[in-house]
Length: 126
Image (tube, rainbow, N blue to C red; front, side, top):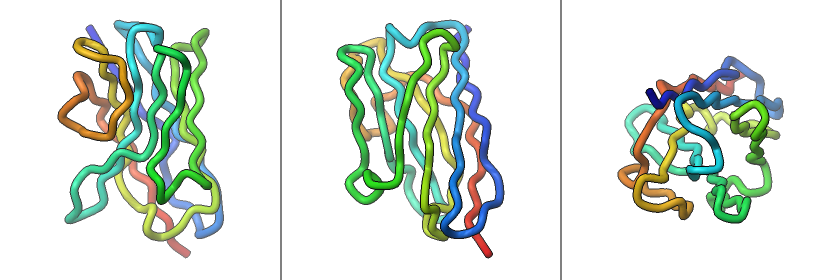
């Protein structure tokens, strides 16, 4: 059974950092691309970062590329998202998702992903 479980969210002050984790089970990283998405209240879900097993490439949404860092640990079958210099507008539920049944190419279209985690809340506030 394919499962993705996010963790690491919380309440943080502006300027702080968080590392989100996405633990995978039922499949391995080498077979999938893993994307990170976020959804703020009243807004559509948007992709912020992705890493693919095709060649290890990483991708970022333009607006966050200087503050977000995605990484993968094959031994732990996990993907991480380090968010630095957090801003109030980063407040959202963050999801990780896997795509690989049809393509392992990274993209930021939620509908292209096959499996989703339950999300972890990130709140940036003083």
